[in-house]
Image (cartoon, rainbow, N blue to C red; front, side, top):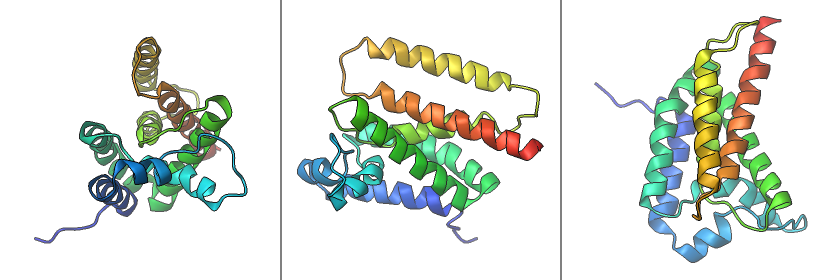
Length: 183
């Protein structure tokens, strides 16, 4: 029996995130692997940080929490929708979340939790029909939004905004993808 690199986008993201965590210190993480805190369109680093921040993580627990969900849900999505579509979804989620965060807040994001929430919401649309809303989507939405709204009241280093933005992007992808498949 041989080992297969069965989900290239998800596995590459996972291995890259682990390497970033293991090999780079906090200064490099802050410089290269956090989202931009302000707009700087003339800086090439600004554009790199719109994507690279999803590979940086604050601690081992943060990294493991992200990767567990990515490794459970991601390969299923990659198998069903293809590597190119999953990569596109990840890029759109990371870039749009970072840009919105830069527009609305003066802080940086770090980690792939927005991508995780995008995957969770998108996967709940996997069996949607043209005139039906999956009950799983309704339950996931209620649980996640309820949890995130409750978490907003806590003082912590977690960006509930990126979770909600990623979830909204995933729901949008699922909704529009299901519309495209039923036409």
